[in-house]
Length: 182
Image (cartoon, rainbow, N blue to C red; front, side):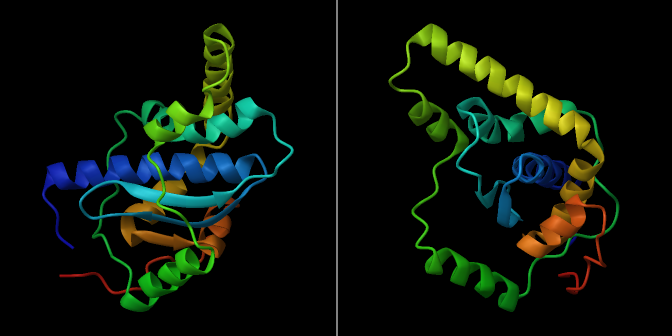
């Protein structure tokens, strides 16, 4: 798909943001079911986190997208064409969503507003500060994986659980199997 420079930049920002969520989840021992970005911008990462994580680590998952964007500010989009998932790949993700009966997924801002309603303000602020620091440290440690995953998302638009794991662990197979949309 041919994109003008502004659209490429917006798509790259979405890929970085969603890759930040995915890398963070995998780095703390969670599992990414799939990650996707949309041609108009935005995206989604569906994941599972271990239940025994400290609350600030769980909260870091939400902050990781914006932290990834901050850490990679000025990073140019990769060259080459983008490629959107085939109907079969999109349908397989739709089945995942239906099978697990995923509710309407709230935005990061909605999650942040809901996460800390009963905590005193000072405790909530300290928890958010700690979560942000954890997210920054995790993403700095895994920066090469963040860029690999963002590049794969940018080119593919959709990554399955297996593709996310392979890309994160530096064992990516060829991720440009689908033909580019012209």
